[in-house]
Image 1 (tube, rainbow, N blue to C red):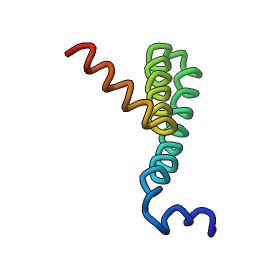
Image 2: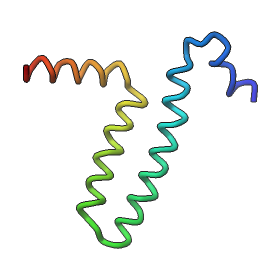
Image 3: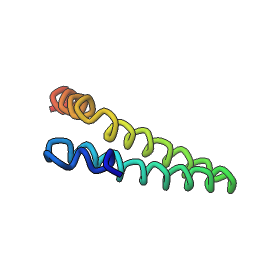
Image 4: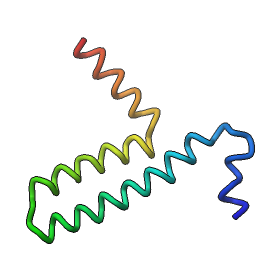
Length: 78
């Protein structure tokens, strides 16, 4: 349990810690929904959830790269 609370001691890694924990919960929910849509053969909903999961993984595990990508897209289209 000490290892789990270690990032909370200085506050610098709190954002990363929260993103990983909450993000993994969302990914688990999306995986269950994906399996349910596959079982019901709801292909459109399955693809939509898969795209959402890919975006969520980008936000959780690569936040700096994701922000850079959004900034580059914004500059390209503005």
